[in-house]
Image (cartoon, rainbow, N blue to C red; front, top):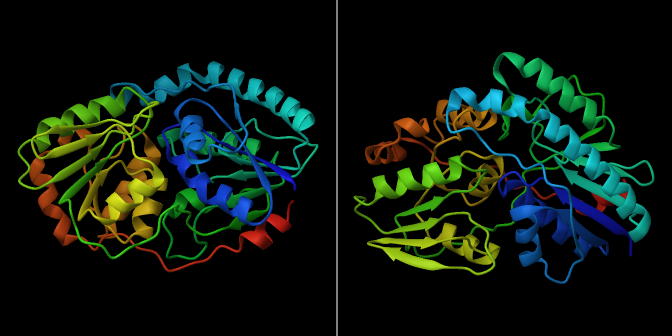
Length: 348
């Protein structure tokens, strides 16, 4: 069995959750996945795959600013720390490859998980990294790192009917690019609707907590039944009630899949993995992008302009905004099947 190191970025839970179908496919095709990440992302994968070997990587320790206008400055300020973390994970990768006999690497946006001793893949939906007036620079830096890998996988469709828009489509990257189709760990199921609204939150602090506090305040007057998932990975799952709101700190994949299917509408951030999941389940939604995160703001605006999902800035959200949802089509994408056998065989 060939050992494949799978290493998602710990920046919210999206990178880890979209790695789940990749890990499952590796197991089904006879490979031995080795999991590597840090923080909540690693904990999530350990809960999903308790029998697999897992390794803790150096942490990027990314946090967001409280104010949108300070977002870019905050990232610039922590750049030396990011560079140090990338160097540390690159050193760790060499040790892991040699000590564990790794035959291939799949890195989801971890820039330093690269080696010349085995085939390497960089998975990302961001061929263009949006940062306002400095987009050209952040994109160029990203391309510099991607070109160190043997291949780049984009979890989207190459055609015009796609989910990532200009984020995942570029003509300037000099690296073999394969569009592997949208990834989701979920399947659509025709079940009875139990919840009028489901709230999904995750992502770096302090913005995750700021949104949670705002939504709990606004939604206490919501007339229907709500299930609220805080996206806080802890050792034990907790459930509490506040009026008609059932609050979970987190859900396992199977429960999350079931609950999204049982919910009429989803209120969440406009993270790309969330968009892929909701499109797979053909859900109506309302998006509140993380303040200052250009990627989420772009995706939210694009889907709103396409009349698929309404959205607004976090500071502007109020309960009556949810009345806009019936005017929008909701999310979906054409049924696609990724040929994982051929995809893996082409590299590993």
